[in-house]
Length: 369
Image (cartoon, rainbow, N blue to C red; front, side, top):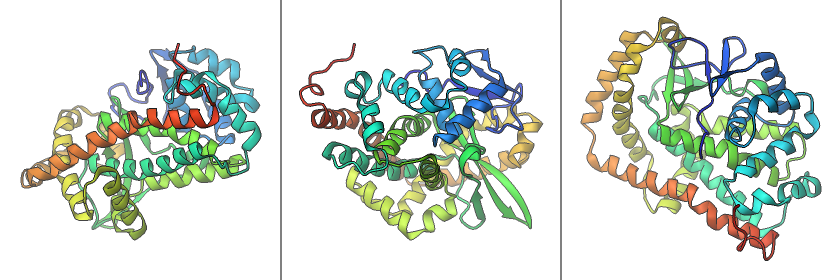
């Protein structure tokens, strides 16, 4: 996944976080090149009309950056709403996560023209959709297991993931890591705190949003932008749901446990998930302690916490982490490694099944250039 996490926005000279928000963007860079925000906003509007979120649009553009000049793409394609979606689909598959079958053939365009609006009855596609749903459950688990923050189940935590154009408002990039903001009520006042993902989990999230989810949306036969946007909003709500709601909703909890057990062979319940998360929080926070000390006042105010609060939370989590049992971390490491193998290597067998089914005689013999 070369180059996927190089894209960033810079709102403050020394701030590690930058809001994905038109109101606070001051500069937008990709590999040192500055973009015109007016063009960017119009491009994002076009993507929203085709059912893409701001996060997916930016990451997708960066993922294909090695294959074409991104600023040229923005200016040349800004007014061509009709073919923007199909063009991005082709370019995304050009650098190839699924590789041979989708990279060089007209498979995606064939599906888009002949099957949009109808359910695809194909064994290979059905397998892809089923695996994608399983990966979504596991990704949600990994995100909350590796998030660098203490659970706040006793507080009324609520994420602010909105539909359509505002879908990426609370997502951040911080030195190749993804973060999102939770708001909660405490002492009759609303506070905010950031949740961080380590680089490995951030890359998995990007892989899902940029490569797996868009293809799943297309193959599911969702007919129009309205359906696409509703589907994207539901997915974002599922992934970024708050800690308190995430672990207390019976439907999500049972689905998560069943999926994790089936894929990993690990019988881990909700209590074990919480133990693992608490054990790893201190490890992740220790990497960011220096970062907190280096943040600007603007960033601290934006997050809703002062530097003293960060240090107190860090010390509390260090004490809590040291009391956790070692087997929790070992079980998590085993699950994490297995899950990454499932994502990055399981796609090869899945690709072959789809190719053999839809492109007889080509999928198993085709080689990348």
